[in-house]
Image (cartoon, rainbow, N blue to C red; front, side):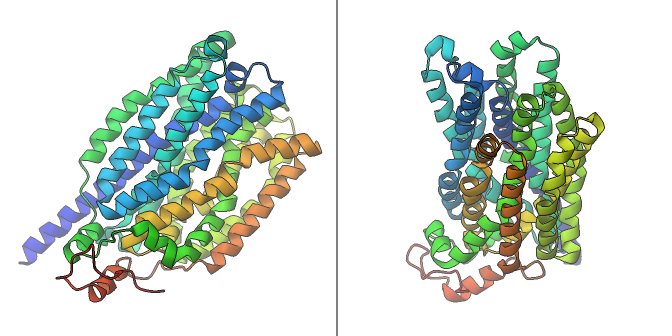
Length: 460
């Protein structure tokens, strides 16, 4: 009996490791798709799809198409969150991967303004909406798949950080592909053909991601819900009705980190090239180095959250970010290449102090029955309040006030909001991750059909 139990434990651990790997690789591919658009939008899409506008307006218009991908994320979170909690994490994540990848490949085929006029921008906007819809449902499921395993209970912060690891890995891959194409091409060729190659490359990544995700087992937490018949009929509705404070707090804790990342990785390109006249290749290489460092810092901070707690580390990260944004732009403005590289690398590491422990911190705020829905909604709401508009607001503030200090103040305010919200979001890292499933069983007798059973989610 003991031998059989040990074999089951080993098998479960093997599936848990595979689930973490699948979440990481899948997240990397989807973030590659999302980031490649932002990087190209910040450099060449303005002149290709809005050539009649002045440089400032063209940048704003280009970044506006970048923003619409964020605006639709909460809708994607609700849609895929429903199915992730209702029919399973695995199948839902395969769907988000295919939607995101197909949209990205099609972006690489859209004709520019000189071929079809404004319809090129319209097509970009529609495809960007589909990208955002897909990525809106990715994060909550990836975190659930990576963390809902009993063998990972004592290292959930570390396990949850691996889907986050997929983000810098995706950005690293996007920058690597983009910088390679840029390096081996003339400016004219890059702006006509070269920019399309990173988008078309996504078709290879789709095949890899699909193969990996199809082989992942459903999580034990979801299987328990199936066995105990505690699956919610309308998980999104339950999450909003019973866990709306947690959803709003999650949105708040994301504010500083979310806005900072897109300013540190996207706005820095338009500001660096357009205002500081730093070469695009130099900035790409600096960001490549920063992403390489992030591959270490993200899991490191996730691991630390298992030791000192999610909330404590998150507040440290938010406060550090609020302070750092002031010397950051001063370092960029220095004109010294080494100092500029240091600023870019440090910006990503400071961002990762909050980013590493974030998945476990957020997912632990919701019971398994609404974990995909609740965590996704809170996480993606900040796409509207912080992440999406950040490059637009930064561009406007700098243009309006004529000083980059205005952008630093903006980021510092968002970091303060994140720190305050983190104080009030429960830190449940030592609690039973699946406690709500047990409580649900008592609330919903086994013989009652799930469609007519009372709500299995306990009141807070």
